[in-house]
Image 1 (cartoon, rainbow, N blue to C red):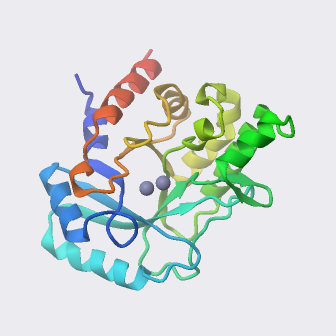
Image 2 (image 1 turned 180 degrees about the vertical axis):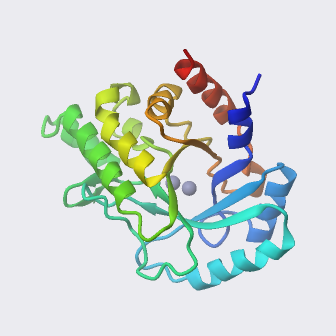
Length: 247
Ligand SMILES: [Zn+2]
Ligand SMILES: [Zn+2]
């Protein structure tokens, strides 16, 4: 049986895409899908980079769509974490952007983002240790949480999805490693999503974060309208995380 907590968490989709970036469907269809899925809140998180120019049209479209639906629409963007300073790949002008999904699309090295295959090669060559890789990733993510610009809300998108791409298991992330990240999330009010598309973070990691006072959320990472609010894996993972933290 679902707890009250997971029932309310599952009424918000923290992570969705429209055809403003690489989603298949226009905003109106994504909003209609959120209504059909019974969501209370839909967070739109189209991809941006520093050179993205569509934000004025995007934020205006989300504003206009609010008059057409009972679902609360949050105008967000998804941006990648660039380096161990937690720099985010965002345009300078974020007018109208209310929320930022912080994403590990590339591995954040001290001097910039690296393809996960490059990290895999450095690990295989012995140039980097898995402990150093984990430390860098957690430090970069922690600083990104602290660097969310303005008074915007934010959440961590598909946390640790990059680890298996680098050839590392998420199981190597322990409570000690995660403590500073959890503290930053708690202090800044940044949630961590359980991501339906990438099936991460694991219920074990989610339980560690929740135990440290971090709010968990649900993100479909929908690139098609029919995937909005569809939380098959997330529902089970939330229940499993809750079981681990209940005494
Ligand atoms: Zn992403
Ligand atoms: Zn996404």
